[in-house]
Amino acid sequence: MSVKLYITGGLHQTFGDSHKNLQGQATFRRAVVATGTWIFYTFANYNDAQHGGSSQNYKILVPGQNEDISTVNGSMYLVPDAVEGLLLFEHNFYGGERQVTS
Image: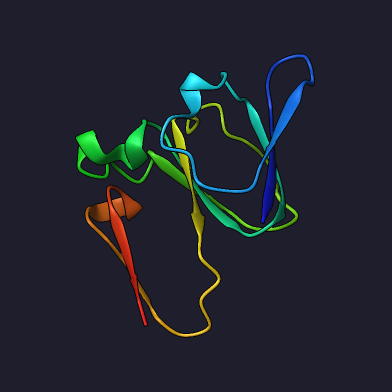
């Protein structure tokens, strides 16, 4: 799984897994998804302190997308590629801790 996150000026960093605090890395402005489904959140720790936030506090990106993430650059979650199963989130709008069951 792979996503490139860009900062102003064109510099980028490639990620292959979830990150609870993107602001600790840099202030990313754009995401280009190569593989995987990614959920981006406005706040660190998957909007947990905001109890999931609102519909404006997340963005779901799939392969091939090249999107502005300047309003949702607090954290990101890589959705697992499960053939069968259920993904449960602690809060509305995909926030907080999550559990994958099969």
